[in-house]
Image (cartoon, rainbow, N blue to C red; front, side, top):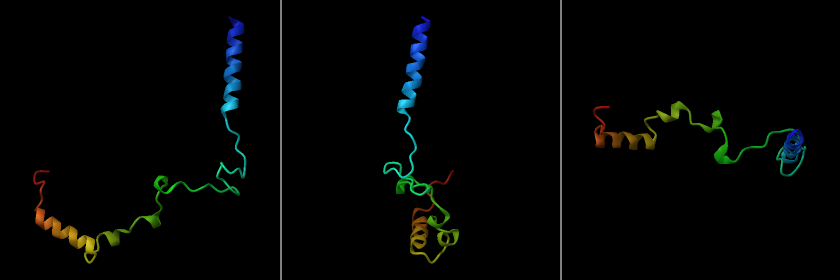
Length: 83
């Protein structure tokens, strides 16, 4: 029984080492070149402050989108009255 436990633990240790991938600098599949972190795909990255519109542009009454929103709000006259 002791031999089986030693053999099983060796298999687990060696199997874990075989699965782990070494981090090599400059490898084509690694993506990191010259110590920089590669950029994530466009749909999977954290937005930065420059990517988000400022609050001033969101509340600008002269913006055509805001004018359309205000017109639509007047037309529907607050659908959700009891909320």
